[in-house]
Length: 325
Ligand code: ACO
Image 1: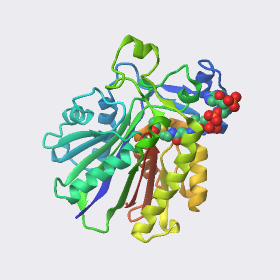
Image 2: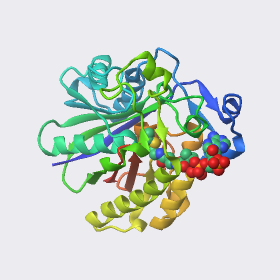
Image 3: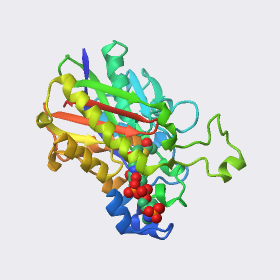
Image 4: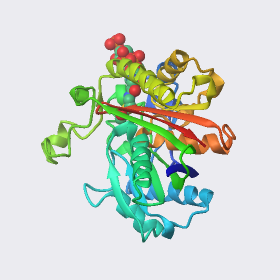
């Protein structure tokens, strides 16, 4: 057996942070941000919001879309770099919130590749007979780890959640292949160093702003382009399809220029590349499931169409999945 996506959902908190708002916070401009990133607006969770609150809203929408009762779920996997707590897992909080009483839950950390990693793990568990129905979520409150005095990173990130419900299906339908990669030698390019065992919580650690995202942007940019093109090609080759067969390409939403270069190198026309980062910024593991939920609502793919998702993030990690919807 294989697995297929039968429902999609998303949630973004109502409060918005625009480029004009950022102009008042750091030395930047709407023109610079728009030209260099394509981002206009990000959504920001109110203080005190738990990541699992965002997961809850996206998950309920996906379960409604799928017509699946949460009590019938076997597996809950949350991809996130901003969990509710070090433990229990955000997946366990989510399980309790939605009433997925028969499921087992776990979190997975792969930064911006988090959703494709969780999709792959849930697909593999279903194929291995460890459950028939899975809830797969990518969700972040990145505003809790953004340094709003650092103009090179604070303009990029937003909060949000996306969810997918997977069910068992015959081989040849649904998720056709998943491809996961990482290179820990490149960890320094993209990191949030504080709050773990290397730099535990302390007033000094917070003063040094170690509990926030640090990025070598232009190096990361180059790796993102190369690795996303490679891993997209890997998915196409494995299934023996060409890019012309793909109805919709859904890349991680980090930077419009990355998306455009990758699209061009793959040879896919712009109208078949999904972009929504102008309205959400980079929501890390949430970006692909939010994009999939919006693409479905907009009728950008139909039953039977091939959709290719490709992600890239801290680790470094990169991943792709080819799905027949
Ligand atoms: N406003 C105005 N100027 C700025 C800003 C800003 N917000 N930020 C940086 N600059 C300046 C820099 O100081 C630099 O000035 P200088 O030339 O005087 O030194 C100049 O703009 C160019 O800086 P670069 O960093 O070279 O700009 P670049 O074109 O590379 O854009 C960006 C930066 C947007 C961060 C880009 O490199 C990028 O998107 N990188 C990839 C991000 C990514 O893919 N992340 C992966 C996922 S994230 C995750 O896993 C959590």
